[in-house]
Image (cartoon, rainbow, N blue to C red; front, side, top):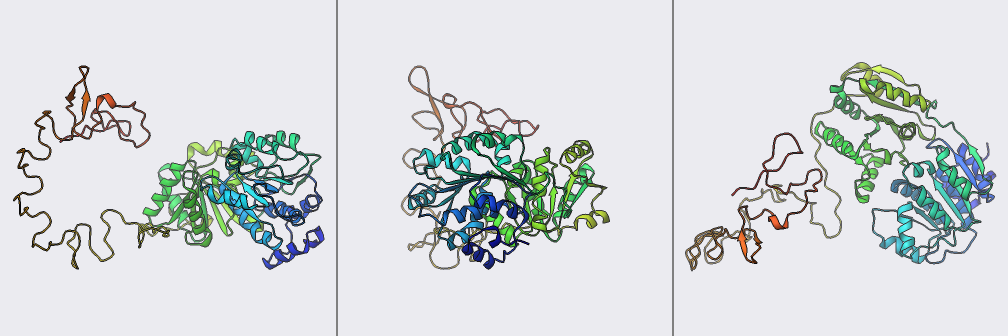
Length: 531
């Protein structure tokens, strides 16, 4: 069997791979490396988890190791990917290899500050791993120029087309030199990327190492037919299994709801979707990879590009509607020759459409009717009953300037064991007896009054009618047509009629009108404020 040296890879990179324990090329690498190292345009299709990152990364590193450092703001190679997670994984895989040959990499993705990305570009980076949106922003800011690009890689090109990035990718490729080498890698190569291939690739050589289906011998597919009222209970029992599990829901709200419900029954899970900040997404993925949590719940946007070793089960809590989504979700297990299983939870009304989708995906699943506690469910997925002990949120790691001990919520017990509002026991603190013998709230020695007593000068209490305007103190006033002000009948915290905005509320927003709320759900009105 041919090794990396036999494929033409420079010896420093061969040695660097050996130090990582990588000595035998995967099939996609054996197929594409000779042509890519020779400078040809390459179309590569391989099953997800088959080693595509090194298939394009090694030729790029080998090419750039022979040239001088990049000029400021002018990267020499560009790797375009659809998601932030994939960008970071590509970067993590190639940075150690790049250091051995003096090639520097940097990611350019959204959701993080521009400063470090701009500073790195000004110092000069050879390889820029970027998402289309952030790269376009950097170019428009004048801090990135693609004139020196020698090789461009499109990873997961079909997903970029599916996500609507095709116009952005086309515009970015048009900014690279016409004679630059181009490598396009994806799990599927279909009509969506034909326009890119025809316009930007010159006599490309195509290497396909896997059928465009997930029906591989190392992956078992199960269709679990469940009663509607058992859906969460079945999902929770599967999540409580031993082993690393990825679960997919259709929407961001569905992901968050499932994570909260799992925590309530004793299963700690992490949520991963586009609505999370990049810092939270990175921390969640790191905890999953390091084994601090064994369940990751994600949306389809996270299905591509996530490579975590040892995921033994993928669960479609919500069946996908598109065969591609199924294939890429399923591809999180049985990676690089490992075995794995895929389970799809299907309600009676979803059975027909799900089977049709699986047929298009080339998958023939084993169908089983299960309920909570069925031996068959445990046998197929390793399901077991959750502990029932709610999982408490762990405090996030402290950053510089954060309060010691992590963030505290209202009502939390302070570190000295007291509750909010308890009388302190130690030295002088807020609320202690002043030096003149009085406590906070005692009658004022000079005026003999408590907070809230009638004002000695005006004879008023806080909130009494203003003697000048005849209205409660702090109440909204609106200008009338005669130029004066008239008091409103609403409470002081309500918005004045003249300043009221359009009712453009989102989910969970407080209504701005004073109609009483009915009992018909979130569409009702909030009650008027009373005093």
